[in-house]
Image (cartoon, rainbow, N blue to C red; front, side):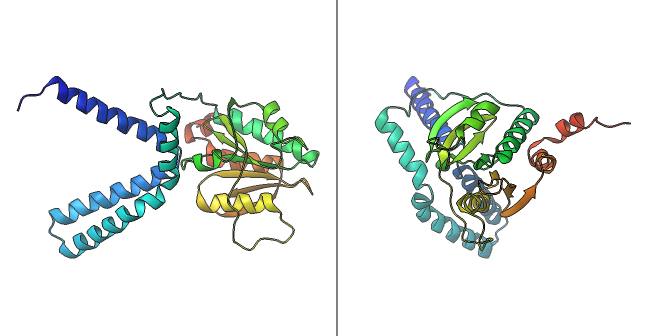
Length: 260
């Protein structure tokens, strides 16, 4: 069969659409779900290759159920794709954001949180990690601004429009502010308010880190992995963020490296 220019154009169009779809779901929970689907598909091929009939049948049934559930699971991404097509943005060029050094960002966050704490100014600062938070970013005001302590502090100034929502940091930049987070159904101390419930709720659904500054007491807390760590000092908060955010090689550099 001869390979024609029409075939090349056909392949390029399909590749371009796949590329745009990958950019669309990047930064969302859909990325993790697709990895899970890939694992199931690979396991199904292996089971068929080794003639594991029962395992193969179970995996095939699982795939069928997943395919039926996909429109529900990917509803936010499908809606966003249709909206972008309607606005003519689907074929727009994808703009990369610049990165911020983890150590610089940690120092800036801790310093700002400490200043807000001393003034008893409430704050909710979310740091995106491996699981995307795009669905929550879109509930707030999109900023895509370079990280700075001044901007971080100004967002949470009392009576400002974005004061009560969450600020989300992504790849060293301020992605959005005034964002709404899911509230936890877990039993928390009755003295804890909506900020703490929202922080725990997000930690139950993602691997994000959320720093909370209490408006009533000025207490610093950190929600991560469905746990709330309260009454943190400035130094302890810095240690926790470095533990979760600093790559091993940067930790060595930060603390002097190997003496050997």
